[in-house]
Length: 336
Image (cartoon, rainbow, N blue to C red; front, side):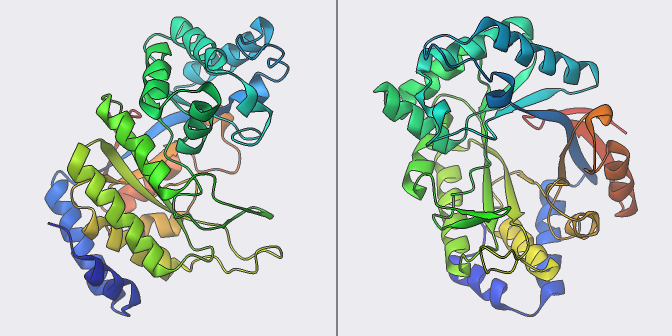
């Protein structure tokens, strides 16, 4: 049984970072006694960019644009990707991509599935699904079921609005895209259909500790109900910028939030500290503060300033663990 809401708040307010870290490490060792840390090789592809020009018909993707998307996916597979995340970097709710009908998304997913039958396809955040359901006149379960039948394997867990507060994204401030109740409803519906999901908590941009603990509690209760979360990701938001006026979380705050999440959510098997979102030194320390997964890296030829697979393996070994590669649903592929 995880700690209570009050105990979690006390931990976040405590100065005993080492003690909190030791508690989290004990939970990690209980759940993962084998002494390994996992990571995935997968690529996020912006379908909105790849399909640019494909919105003339809200019911059918443009064939030429679809082939550009297929080519991008094929290239990442050739380089070692075991899964793909279809994201909308310039789209999402409130943009032209919201106007694409359900049939358009089904057509895109079916095209990807037909060409890559064994590929794990993740995509569409809770916010996007809420918007798609509203625009299609369907309820959430019907929407997710149709997307799953078309080829979607799991829902992306990277909503920036999951705390229900405005968050800092780069050089702008984004308001919540869906409420916490809507976010929970999407994940509950997905779990009810047998579709696994990941819960991500963005923190550090003006949200209070009480908000973080309330979100952790909501995730824990839903996991008790459905068992559908494969992982939880506490992700710190960017540092201070001129527009937001907020400071990003310090390394101490990141590690403390990670540790509290591990102890609070002992009913979720995996806690991921994303290599793409954290400094490598924080990532390495986080492996002793409850994290058992280092996130994902892009195939080597696609990597730029982001950590490489070799970076991850080195960090994991230096922390005293054995690196293992996994796929998107956290199935172990092989030891490294």
